[in-house]
Amino acid sequence: MTTSRTLIGSRSTGIGSRALAVALSLVTAPLLVVTSAAHAHAANPTLRSLAEAKGRYFGTALTQGDLNAGGETSIAGTQFDAVTPGNEMKWDTTEPSNGRYNFGPGDRIVSFARSHNMRVRGHNLVWHSQLPSWVGSTPLNQVQRVMESHITTEATHYKGQVYAWDVVNEPFNDNGSLRHDVFYNAMGTGYIADALRTAHAADPGAKLYLNDYNIEGENAKSNAMYNLAKQLLAQGVPLNGIGFESHFVVGQVPASVQANMQRFANLGLDVAVTELDDRIHLPAGSAGLQQQASDFTSVVRACLAVSRCVGVSQWGVDDAHSWIPGTFPGYGAATMYDGNDQPKPAYHAVVSALGG
Ligand code: 9MR
Image 1 (spheres, rainbow, N blue to C red):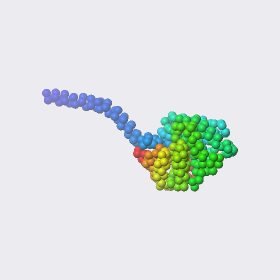
Image 2: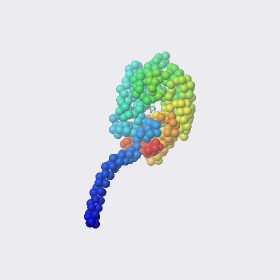
Image 3: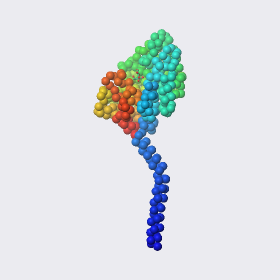
Image 4: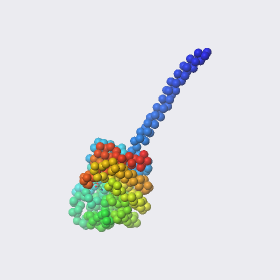
């Protein structure tokens, strides 16, 4: 009996172990899958998923060339959930001669955005730069008509596909005076209200922005933008947001970025960081890269701290395709990804600032 019990017991224990192992494997297999997926997600969060969890977007600028650039293209489609066309919606591309429109390049960016579930920031409708020469030589009494047709045609073409428009780009000089470009010369300060009203009539669903650089901190230029915004709102002009380009030099992010964003938000406006980069004198050493990580962190934290800050966009994906070296000789390394599309300390810092 004892032997038999032992045998039975021992056999029964053996069968029990196998059954338990099978049962456990059935129960744990899906659990393991879920656990490892969750682990992978936690280990490799994306900028977009983290930003979305905070009610923000994380965008990038893309040019047509960037759509077929291998690693850069794949990072764009996985890490970012907003696209600003680098050049493709600017006047020199979209209306190179009076009344002849070309939306092909912009459409390709929009189609990339749609297939990757990204929103589009339209950039831009009215700007003194990348303006075809025919606009500058238009008689002043016809400039308003030309500007309105351009805005109406472009904003109508992209109606419903653009989350926000930079309607007027870079209207101010650094001292806070308005640039005396062809639009100002033809219409005075009123060209800005006219541009916003025209864009609103064409696409009432798009958020309409004024966008500029060197307005990130509190200074003469941002004061001028603030006063203009306040005045436009008081006049009932359809202005929804202010874009802070944020082309910084490493170590020089103004301390007043958050306070400055907040004062615009207090007017009832959305605010966004629209073209973030942070240039370093080359070669970039580890101290520079660490400072850059800290600069990106302060910008992202400022946006998270201001509830009307809707998102942050970096100007381009990686250092290899950034506009910086071409414009500021000796400088570069301005983005979160290096020239080989490897994430830099700034990337990891942003992930962590976003809660990853
Ligand atoms: O990234 C753009 C670059 O490819 C163009 O050569 C340049 C010409 O002005 O414009 C760059 O984008 C600018 C943006 O449209 C407005 N703010 C400053 C950006 C960097 O110059």
